[in-house]
Length: 450
Image: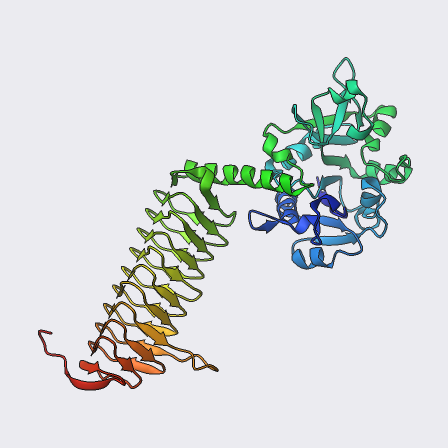
């Protein structure tokens, strides 16, 4: 059967106490609505339609290539919101999946089960439910003595007996398309002046149609986001879900509760993550690495058998067997070849360090290329910015840069060349030469046994 998905995202989200639309608040580094869009797209194989309010440019911009948009000019309830999609979706599908946008932890598998349940249901509706002692503000599913669904009552209108019901209406539905588009215009106006999707259940029951139910077992999936407290609760649940999946895939975590892994991260087996490690964005980590503690890795690629300790790595690439830290900072464009070592308080930006380069401590390398096996002494600085432009530094293979050397770019230190401690190098140093002083001058060639 052909199916289209509609996500209801026109709510104001006033309880977030924020100028940012609720569905754009971040969960695991992604906007809330991006989770729902991805789940619907995976469940149906098609871009979902998102119903938004008239002031939703930020939402449109955030999802410009991931969804189709429908505007609800007046916010008159969930039934009215879905009705805005009728003209675009009528006759386009056999089934319509409808999901509230503030349910970011709903899995695609749960939505597929909902769809499959409706495919086998002769009636017009299947709803998603969960059984819990924690109501979370959801409506209650009412059944008769034979267990047949007869209605949904909203929590705000429920009697004490109805509030005691434990089966919750989660806020996701799958409908027979023709029935849905025919019945939406017939929804009654509520006392609040709105039209509710839940009234479709009573319509179906009155007509003798079967309302089927698909149940969610994992209660983390039904965490709805209405406040920042809910958002924090969802973060904990998401972290637990992500971390568990990686531990099952062979990644070790000493303290999963303090380990943060983004949804787009890829980790190799036998990697160990120590406490308070954050791995974010489209980061890839190879096998048998050790990251942390107190480490941030963001939008980076790390090879196999690497060690990153108490450091920040962002926008960098590390080949195999690289050691970083403690207290190092690899910035955008840092590329470390195989076996490179960056010690404490070293910083690298927009530079390529060849295989085996050693940069022990207290140094800054920016806009530079460093050849294989070079040694960068403590306190070395590439003076790459003249106030207007960045300039390049080149250090040849096997070079030895003495402690506290200032390399005033543009400048080149040749293959196997050396600089003395405290040198200020503002002219090129030829291959195999030794330069000392302020400003540095070449005093001799390097002897074979130097």
